[in-house]
Image (cartoon, rainbow, N blue to C red; front, side, top):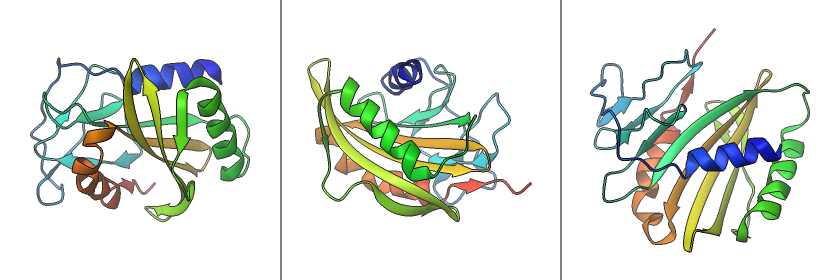
Amino acid sequence: MKKFLALFLAVVFCFTLLCSCSKNTEGAPDGMKAVESSDKLDYNIYIPAHWIQDLSTGVVSAYVSNSDLSNISMTQYNLEELKPLDDYVKQYTDELTANLDELKMSEGYPQKMILDGVEAKKLEYTASLAGNTYKFMQVICIKGATIYYFTYTALSENYDANAEDVQKILDNFAFKKK
């Protein structure tokens, strides 16, 4: 799990300026565009039209602009063992605490929420990395035998400025019907 956490954090913090900006707005909510992937995704995720999709990371991710690298990412993993969501969230938060400097979980988190009809847990926390303080919001859910991690990462001072866009992304997220 430490390898997973290290890989996950590397992807989240991999801010790159090399990207491709999609204009795929067909079927997207007003003011948004569909995120593209070389993988066949089992969900639809839309980002604000002015955000930039980052295709260089190998995961579904996008950031606000070249001057504001606040970003979202969506990752998923097949589970070898089905356990309650709370067990996975507890294990994940324990690993965050062990691996991130100055981690502070926001009061009242994790919170229960629903992501497209699926029970989820929302985390919000701050941590210091490379001399900067970042604020994170994660939504974790299990559907079938797959666990999904939606992550919003921003410098602490930029977090609130993009919160409305991030909420719109979550509000329009949808698992594909099989």
